[in-house]
Image (cartoon, rainbow, N blue to C red; front, side, top):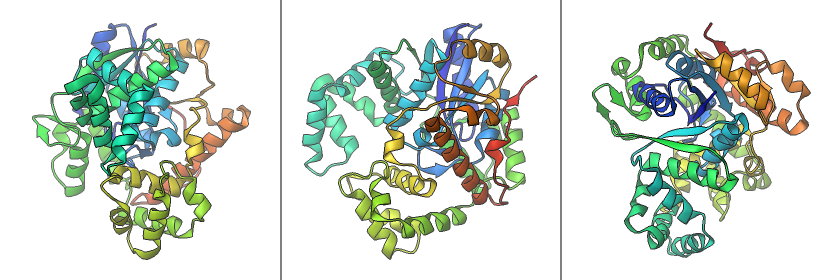
Length: 395
């Protein structure tokens, strides 16, 4: 069976995601199985997801995904580079043939040229030189890459192109046989507005928060699941998130701060100082931000502090394949994956107890993150769900 992988968040699943899954199936053949590696309850932008990973995996399975696997929290809550590396590692472990991703530029050759440039020691040296002038990392990287690929460096100004380049870098580093299948993302910018029935996930979340009409932007099955979760109060409350995070930031030791991901160059000390003098999380992040450090990096650090994610943990690779949902062809795909997977496949949480200690530690970290997510909800949910939840299955 041909397996086509998609690394995703589906926060929430919308019409653009359905379009991309359809394009991925078309590009890889009608008999291919679509395997989605999805970030969990906390996402790459440094925030809790709008609804739980189990609900979002259900949306995906109802809307075209054949199998949804979890990208554990250390890699889901990471920079684009480590997020992509974690997703590619899991797709390699299942023996996937293709990786499909949305990109503003669907030319895999041009994207690969940028990725290859970024992998060279010479480019890395130029990035450091540019950073010494005080500009942001994104600007320094673009200037450095321009020396090698000219105007194609402008591709790094678009968010989906950035992730696409990171997937290609991860594939090159691993010497993975994964073949890229870019899908043009022309219908809506990642953080932009609406175009007909298409909009980025950020816009959908804005409409949900403001009481706007987001219904036309989601496929009907995903809309039903989302409304069910919102009505039940299973969506995070921002005030609770801020209070819990501020408590954690104010009680951490310097050693705990220094162990956070992306805390180098003294950034952890800056965050600590702001946490000690400001009264809100927004003020802490605003106070710690400079031209060089993006808000997203600081949000991820704050969430990593709350959840107990360390830089050392992020430097490893995901140690298991956890099944969150099984779609129309998922059973067949799962049988094939179990026969050739390079990592343990978890369909029942009880089997975690048989895993090696490092894998159990990651699952326990994931379980604690789920318990924190449960407390953040508008209607707080019970603890321990990770040890009882079974995959959503379309029979």
